[in-house]
Image 1 (cartoon, rainbow over the protein chains, first blue to last red):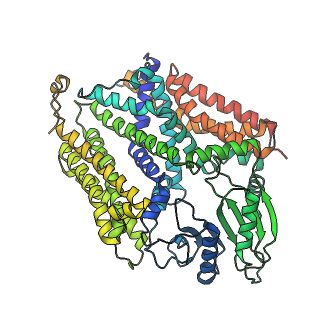
Image 2: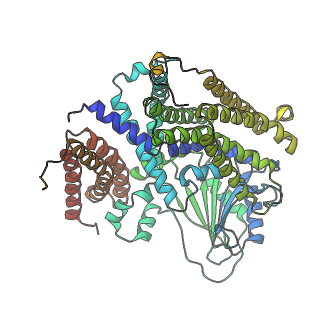
Length: 507
Length: 100
């Protein structure tokens, strides 16, 4: 059995791509949407119109937390910025189903009460690497998927004898050949991005999947590993004696002065009601490429500086820069849109690859073939519908509904499940066309429904300079046009190529 | 009466493919673990820096093992290459020992 390198790599490429292909599509699409996580969060909380300077907003948030959740072991806050007006707060709460809360707080009042309960953009962000599975399984599965994608990308490069020529080759209307061209154009055009985002995605979950280097050098001494990795981190156990926190404003001002032009980013307060409370202020994660911020730590009771740290060790900085490349928090608008566009190209590469697997096996019509055909529909057409359903759920679910944020997530999964079922029940071709029309209608009608329910959006947003809302509306209309174009393209596709007539397609 | 017959070509091919898949997946992760151990202990820099460098380098071990597992001329050389290198790295890490 003698095979050429290209043949064996072709087999590796095909099967590593197919094995978790649907999962990869979901990871890629949710990750691409997460590029605009702040904007999605803002749109999903239309009640929030106040804006406040970061320090004032943190002060308000700390005030509310001290009244509502003084017993928490820690409050972890992210300050508002030019993209998102609310403070994001994470803290432990035994009354919450998950044991902790991850909520947005109003920048002026510090309270979450006047806005609808929603996870906002955090849901798609979490789904991107946790896949709604219990810790750590979702993250491990996402890592495995990323590794398979890296292998598929590298083997894909090897099987390309004419990689640069293929960028300029698209032969439409030629059946399998056209799908292959589309797969190549989308894959090769943004190839550096695909390689970068896949490899750095693995880096973000590295401490979970690769704890071995730590074990090699530290054995089981996790505390020491952590301490040497983050020497700037000041931590001390609770004293057990209560003490009120000193005013946080001066601490934030001192931190900002030390950041020398940098903005306030994350503020964490450990043991907030205890004599040994520690306030740590980090600069904004959008201020630099590396995803490891400079920090200043304070004794919470007195407001006295306990320590400051800025990373300068080469390997740590390399790791943080790779992490930062994936998170794209640094990215200004142009790079942000590039991330979005390249992400869509990657989703398109995966989708065309999945379709291509079928096209290359026209004659075969076994149960495996059928399953791939149906799952392709439910994933590629179904996931956009599920994501739109999440936004519709955000607008339609009643304000005071108990467990409202969870209900929004349920809407997402019910819609996705319905789309998958639809893909199994309808004839293949009809299912593709109908689901993309559903997605197009869902995207096109949402701005109107949203405007009717919130009073924000459409011409009012354009005239009033409500950039978030008119930008979001415009995006939805663009997506509707894209989905409609795909639906029309599939409907117009008559499969007349002589190659395909030899093996009649299964009805 | 049963006659011993050499395994059919199809069976041999099946076993060969299984060996390549095992070499790429199990072998690939094992190689990554051994790489992480050996590099973390072998680099002459501070141990936390060596740890991070080793973890990052270990990422490359898996795709390399996967490519080799399928590019190798036969299943024997595929598994021998991946598991041989793994053993070598593991031995090096064991000889170096955990830094004090």
